[in-house]
Length: 298
Image 1 (cartoon, rainbow, N blue to C red):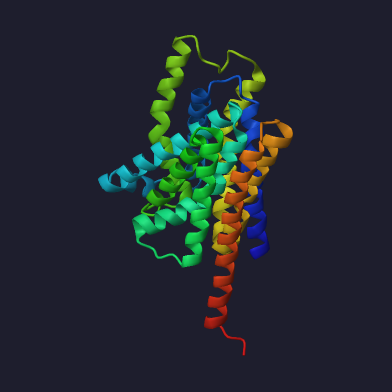
Image 2 (image 1 turned 135 degrees about the vertical axis):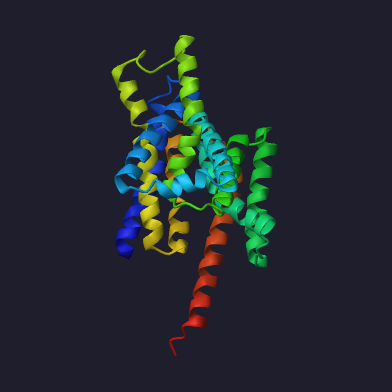
């Protein structure tokens, strides 16, 4: 079962890693229209899965619970903002910076745990966060601008994860409700684009139409794989594998799409990579120490 979980996790992160190639195939379509199609077709696919499993009841209960529904509205807005920023970043030539966002995200999650959940960090974990902050500061000074795409991606996903901690639904049901919440705004925008002559769907070519329809599948499939993996393997293993996706994105940006990667950018990335390496190694060693203490072998 553990091996199957690792296969699912690797599959999910590989799909997320190579996702920029898919969005690049749609770069002739405005980012907001891609996002709207992603929400539209994701909802249809997810709603079909929920209907097949006959599990609408918890979703309806969440809708009629004002506090729970508000949480999902916030989650839907955060997720949509994250998706839009990512799609726009990829198709505007910032794949390297989008990868930076997902390298930073785990450390932002840790920081949010301290700020919002009052979790305590070990002193060595603070060093990792300080290194990452130093990397972002260095990039800001070296590039002459804040790496806002990376920061928006990292912080919106961290806030999304924080909000989801209070979710009353499983991941598939939660994502279905979130896409349902954004469904009408997405359809409304696509109709507006159609009436103003800006619509891409059915106005470019058949390949583009098919790619837009399949945005639902490329959204749902890695999430379903991830959800299955999370049930079968340790979170520590999942945490280490998560760096696979931004690493692939980074390689795509530099090697395939030839985005500029200067020495100054390299220094900033190295600081952040060192922070992740330090944090992961410290977490693993602490996990081993705790395991040995709880389950001594002799």
